[in-house]
Length: 205
Image (cartoon, rainbow, N blue to C red; front, side, top):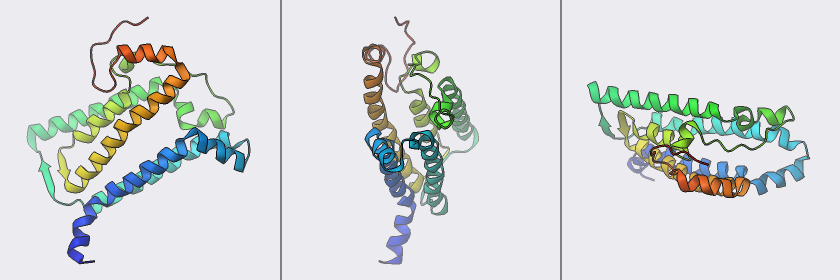
């Protein structure tokens, strides 16, 4: 392959790797896949599976990001001064909102620490705080963080589009599971609170 073609494709390597990462991430999060792995490796697999899954996801996702920094490609925009400062502030505020919202959930269960300890808290539908504005505040903050970059390159743009599509599709996959767990309770909640774009919080039954 011509060297010029290879050089032109390098900025999009992170986006391609992310698509592969997203597919594998979704496959190993599937309950049927986890059940099959537990049958093969033994009944105690569920105690360490979640923690190992999270650790591998974080490490592999970090590796996916490396090519976009090595071969960023053409600069699409680079805002400086006050506009650049405002976007950086919005990104930082979104990160803070994401962390604060995540704390409201059971982080021990999410990270797999509760499973390792041999205990798992009961399923609780959180509808207060940011969850009274949108059903998926973590995803909403994620979208803002992705698109509030003061500097955007061709490689980063491709990666941002891939990540945004994954987040958007992820809301539908997650809601299918939530409807299965909470039933009518979640259906009523979904009727009153928007999916991703915030609206005024409503008083719910």
